[in-house]
Amino acid sequence: MLRVIVRGPGTPAVVLGSGETLLIGRAPLSALPTDDPDAQLRYTAMQLVHAAQHVSRLVGELVVGEEMARLRWHGSAEAQLSGLFDAPGGARRVTLTEGMSALLDEGENQLLVLRGQESHGDLLLVIDVSEPAAPPPAPPRVAADPDAAPTGKAPGLVRGEREWYVALALAEPWLTGADDYPRPPSNREIYERVLGWHGYAWNLERSQRVDDAIRAIAAIAFGPNDDPFRVPAGQRVQNVRFAIGRRAAEVRLVTAADLAAVNRDARG
Image 1 (tube, rainbow, N blue to C red):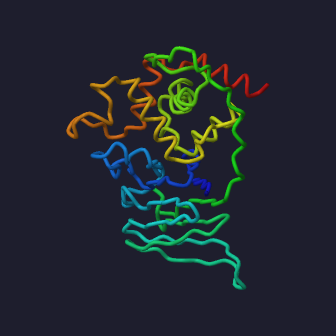
Image 2: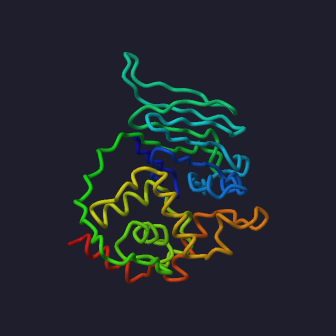
Image 3: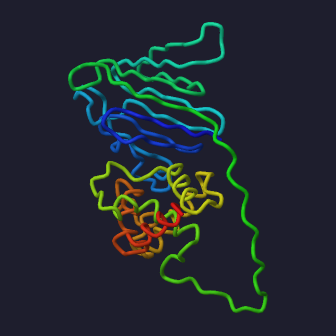
C-alpha cells in the first residue's frame, strides 16, 4: 500500500492512500461524479487557489493504486514532471500534455504547471510517494457472553467505536470552527487521524473500510429518507463527503467536547 502527500502553494497538504484519487485544478469539484455518491468517496479535490484563469478547472488526476501512483494530465497547458529513480542518469523530466499519463517515482516528484500562477509564473506542486509501515496489530478481542441479550442499534454512534472515530475525523473542520476549511479529509487522512487518537485504527488503512464507515455515518446522520447514498439521482448533493462531515457535526453525532477529549488523551 502507498501513502502520497501532495503540497501546493496556498493550500493545505493532501494525504492519500491506496484506492484514492485526487482531482487537481482551478475548480476540481466540478469533476466529481455527482451521479454516483459511492464513487465520490474515493475522490478528494485540491483547488489551486493561486491558479491563473487560463488554468483548466481540472488539470490533473492522481490515482493511487496498491503499488504505484499514476498522474493523468487533463490540462490544456503543459506541465513538467520530474522525479528521482534508481538509474545511472538520476533525475528524469517528462513534459505532460493533455491526455498523457505518467507513473510517479517513489520519493519526491515535482510537478510544474507552466505559467500556472496568476502572475503567469510557473506553479509548483510537490508529490511525495512512500510505502508506509504496517499498521499495528489488532488488540485481543473480548469474547461475547453467549447468554447476553443482543444489543439494539442506537440512533447514534457508540463512543470509542470505529464509526465514531471516523465521524470525529470527518467532522473535525466544523467542530474546530474552521467552516471555511477548503476540503474534508481524505480517507488516508481519516485513517492517520484515528490512529493518532486511538493508537489502533481497526482496518481503516484500507480505503474501502473508510468508505463503509462513512456510509454508516450517513445513514444515521440523515436518516433513511435523506441518506445521500439512497436519494434519487436528481436530489443528490455535489460533494457527499463534505455534506456528511457537516451533518455529523450539526446533529451532534460527535461534538467539540469529544474532539477536545481525544486530543487530550492522545497527548497523554
